[in-house]
Image 1: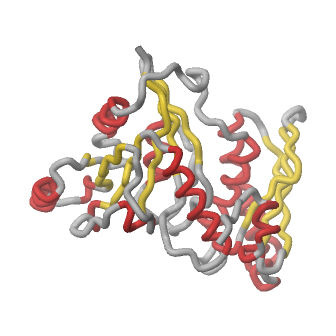
Image 2: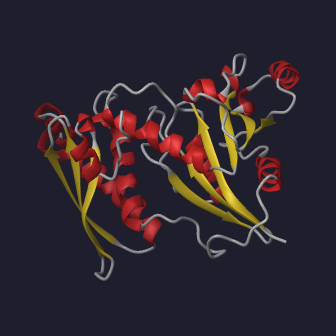
Length: 291
């Protein structure tokens, strides 16, 4: 007998959802940043063992959207909730003194029908007394550290036991349904998040205009879009130093991903107010739900 299904990871921004996905899959699929709202769409990871296959969906943090990009992010998270067989409701343990119901956090009329497991993350940072108090307050919660790997086997066992009996949905050696092109775009954006000040990264979108795997080195033409000329100047940097630094570091990450040398041709363009324009968002692969 085998089990297979969709395991959706949800929670507030910066709860550690992407770190958890990467930990479970055993390689980097989702970008990780100290800046909130770095995940903009569902990221798909596939974890298979002898008897179980989990299609794990990392989702944008649940928040009240202020503009169209955030509405698209919320729509991606709610869609992943609707698709789930099992939901991992991830909460930063430091904030677990008051855990809202998932329906309240997601602003849903009722709780999701899928089995929901409360998962308290970053518990390696707790003092023993804090851990004991949380265990008493949330006796059914799973305690993990996605960063350190603590509690992950127990989490996987708990999720697997609640999946439906089913043949595997994908070949057992697959790790994602998404393309190298998608992950290359995410790695370029992650590198920009790492190197830029807080006010700029949220205005950046990365578009892969060309991806030639048949060439040696692999040729990738990527464009970082920003909303204003002033942002372009910051992104390019004095004498082009900043964009060269982003390109160098992003290329190294992409080479690790594809396992061969890469020529990354990186450009910067201004696309005014793209975060608030549904047509521009669709161009970058985001879908804005109807209001």
